[in-house]
Amino acid sequence: MEYKISELVTKTNVPKSTSLYYIKEGVLPEAKKLKSNVHRYNDEHIELIKYIKYMQQEMGSSIEQIKSMLQHKNHSFASSFTMLAPLMQTLSGIPVGEKHYTKQAFIEHYGFDAGMVEKLLKEGLLVPIGEDDYTDREASIVRLVEDFAEIGMDHSVLKTYVYHAKALSELESQIQVQLCDRRNDENFSRLWKVMFETLFNAKQYLFSRYTYKAMFSALQEEVFRQKQS
Image (tube, rainbow, N blue to C red; front, side, top):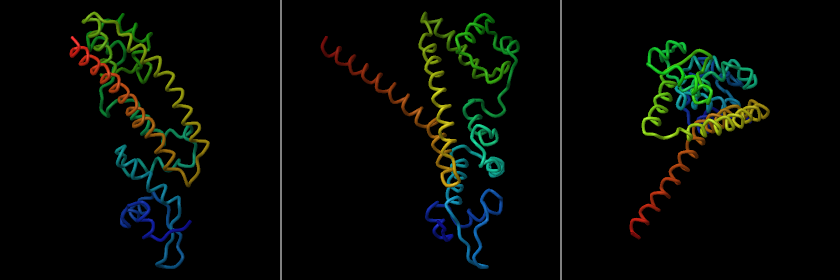
């Protein structure tokens, strides 16, 4: 379908000036020109504007970053690292500017036991982004395991996390492939929104809510037992 600029504003909730700015910056295609002052937009414009808004508001992407990503928008998800870059950066959980260490430097800097680090690597609890790339995120896991040991508890719950995280990662990878198979210019932004929202919203929501439910149930049972005693 084709739309007037007023209809584009209504459907995207983005001001005319912003859409024209996107076109000027090269992140949105030129409108179809019918006359000197008559332009028409299509469904691709709507999808791209939704994508741009989402990447700016939810991922903090700049116009230049989005422009670079959109140069590969007709490629598959899997084949375009540029498109996946903001997703991969978020999944890594490593803040920009974070200090990185080799394994040896990591052990020496934080004063960790080398045997402990090797053990956690084998258990899958330490998952450095690179083969020899460690940050404070890895250090936080080592400290947590040390805290478990300090209070005399086994960290079996963390090992269970590893098991389920690996299984879940396979399912999430399959989602990427399935989304790629459904890719076209009309559903571009919707597919990316499904991927981002699944990984960063739905997963956190479901895991946190079920933990809440379990803890709340345990609390109710404890209160009930206290009333009975």
